[in-house]
Image (cartoon, rainbow, N blue to C red; front, side, top):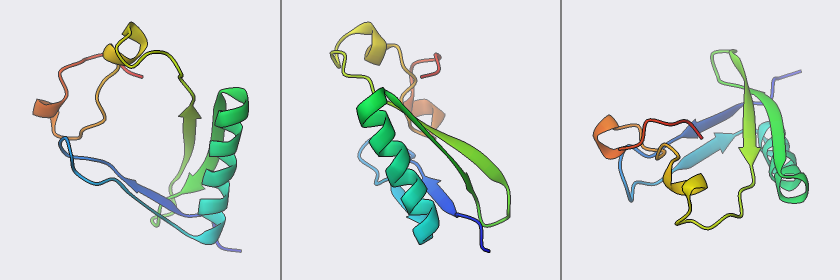
Amino acid sequence: MNPPLLHVYPQATAHDSVQIVGTTAGLRLLARALADAMTTGQGTATVFTADGEGFTLTILRDNSSWTGPAWTHRTLPYTDSSSSPHDEMP
């Protein structure tokens, strides 16, 4: 049986596209994790990259104000370090 593959390609800078590519099995696990996060606040899935390395994908729901500290203190999700002024992790 093939592993559930999922690749998440993040933004380098603001306004860049994010791309998620996966097998049907990987996308099903992502969908289940998203549904869990919407109903319980957190969802997880164990998926793999094409080199066979597994990882845990964690999805968190946070409905607090986008101008409040929960959001303003999070590291921005850009891979170009000059685009992310915050040092804290999500």
